[in-house]
Amino acid sequence: MKVYKIEQPSPYAANCYAVVSKSNNAALIDAPIDAKSILSALDKNNEQLKAVLLTHGHFDHIMAAAEIYEKTGAAVYIHELDAPKLKSSYLSVADFFGIKNFIPFNNETTVADGDVITLDEISFRVMHTPGHTSGGVCYIAENVIFSGDTLFEMSVGRCDMPDGDEETLFKSLKKLSELTGNYRIYPGHGAPTELSFEKKYNPYLLNNRF
Image 1 (cartoon, rainbow, N blue to C red):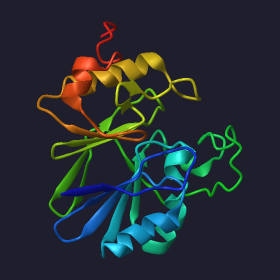
Image 2 (image 1 turned 180 degrees about the horizontal axis):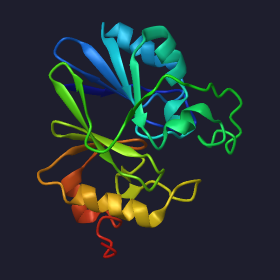
Image 3 (image 1 turned 180 degrees about the vertical axis):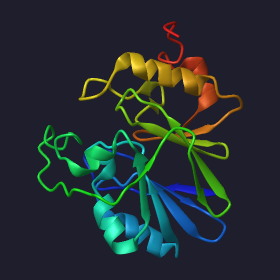
Image 4 (image 1 turned 45 degrees about the vertical axis):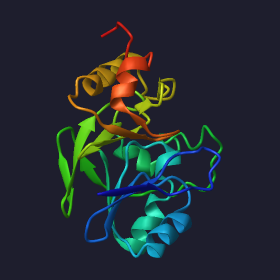
């Protein structure tokens, strides 16, 4: 399994990752802003996009999904509780940030906690981790967690936007903290980290509320 970051020309600094199988088929983790740069990176590496796995429905993680689907036919996955955000500039908080070019998307495949999405030899397990949004998820593949806006290096996602909830987020962090073994964390913003490091030093995972 190969993982690499696709740089995005975006002021919101949302991360976009390609996960590539031995057969050069790819899954995209989030589709932030610019479809052109994403597709160009995949084409350069001769990788065929088969799936787009959205960690949640905020605009800075989904804006390129409609164009990518139109050009590749790749299946777009999102948790069932965040699916309405794909269709609404209000629910996706695009309106709040003054985004004018929001494109509604209606061809998603919804997922729920415990579902498994397969790409050749790679299996992505869906872990529902609400708190930042009601339908936020992490995708776990081998020794890697794509944590979206649930868990960052030494931080966590904000809970002050519509359908965010701090108490719910702490329950999601508890689920992550209870995972055994170590995992490489690829977050929705910022640098990669390790779950073992976050368990020791992230103040939110050390919080005695759980």
